[in-house]
Image 1 (cartoon, one colour):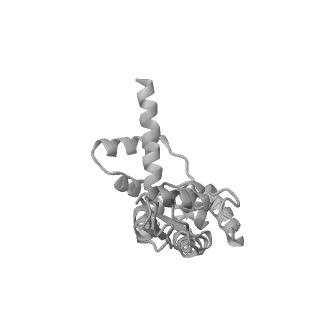
Image 2 (cartoon, rainbow, N blue to C red):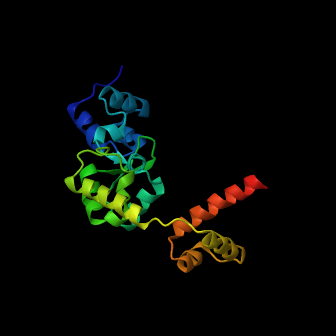
Image 3 (cartoon, rainbow, N blue to C red):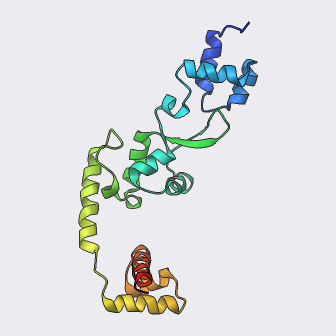
Length: 194
């Protein structure tokens, strides 16, 4: 016959979810992992992420249209506040509060392309975000310069000579990303012509 769950047991589960693995919770409650998992599901706490109301790095990356590694980089090297959690199966992940993200984003606007963020995808969206979005659009319109045939020839010449994209970007007064994209685009065309 199974042991009845006490109020203390239930409080322990709620407090431990995301902080302790399923095996640790089971051991501390002197119950099987299956019993703990079933109780979590009955309590509606089977999904750690839904239970916390926070964003995973993947969810934030998708909303910002950046790579997940970019978000991890911000957490590890640029002070984006995140809570480290463990799923019931010992997998570690980070959770980010939307309000904390917007606070960080306001201080780190140069790291984000606000034109890629769909309006209100991360509610509540602060008022300053729309201004940042418009500013990014204007900057993109003003700064894009079409590639000339001469620049493309120089790009391929220097690349063939062994120059890296940083050096080429510096010589052409363009961003590294612009140089890489142009190179990839024309390489692709070159392959189709051959």
